[in-house]
Length: 96
Image (cartoon, rainbow, N blue to C red):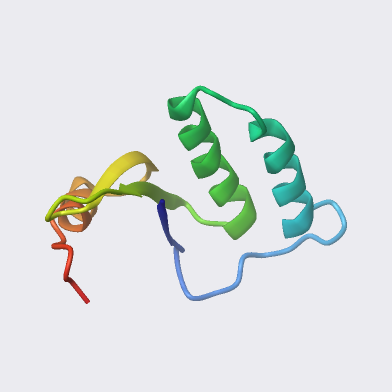
């Protein structure tokens, strides 16, 4: 599985201190929520949701890797342009 995210800029996300969960808190909560989950579409949406929280992004995508010549298949995304999704989906296996 491949996760990609884009930040709105090079600046660090503003922090308001103790009211924000730490990355460890978010990862622990997410691990508890997905444990034993069988609904993959819902799981993928939750991964995108948590990427927004964990990384402070406003765009994110999640791709599955398969054995085809163009091995990246989008399974969830939010905020990415269709051009970005299509360009990543068209990358050949040997792209560097």
